[in-house]
Image (cartoon, rainbow, N blue to C red; front, side):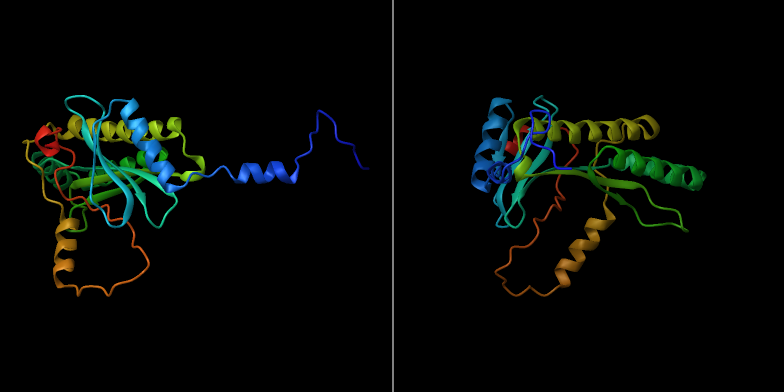
Length: 235
């Protein structure tokens, strides 16, 4: 039985649908908005030269003396804004992890497993860089990369700033978890086996032929992520 439209059952016209679909922000507008939002939140930021991105900025977050380095990227070949931060685990903490894993391999595997589950529940994309295995036991946690994309058709100041906050709180949670069990460390960033392998592959790989297709934005930041913020890096 056909039911006539009423206030309880409003019609959706083609023009209304079209209006909803046109809620789209282009990359230039997105970049301008991101800059404005960072400024309004009094966050220190600087541009990074990146041929693969429409926008790439280093941002100090949270806005305190001990803020960490975050990356905000709008890739050329994706309609999104990516927020990510990479943290290297301290060398002393890695040594404690090696000792722990050798004394109780099953408990170390369980610690890594629970960490992966918690990161998945945090609604973030993540990568854990774990050291080479020793007799079928995973090596120490050497670095971790936390990220979250926001697609341009849903980009708002609220979502962008909550993404920054979510990445930071998840990062802080994992830092506290590491410190609780493995101490404060020696103050020196530890090695990252995965990055050393990548460097070796790059040195032996032939240069790729030029292509009109933009490549993925390289998020391999092997510098001093995870350390206390160094004002000299912003000179």
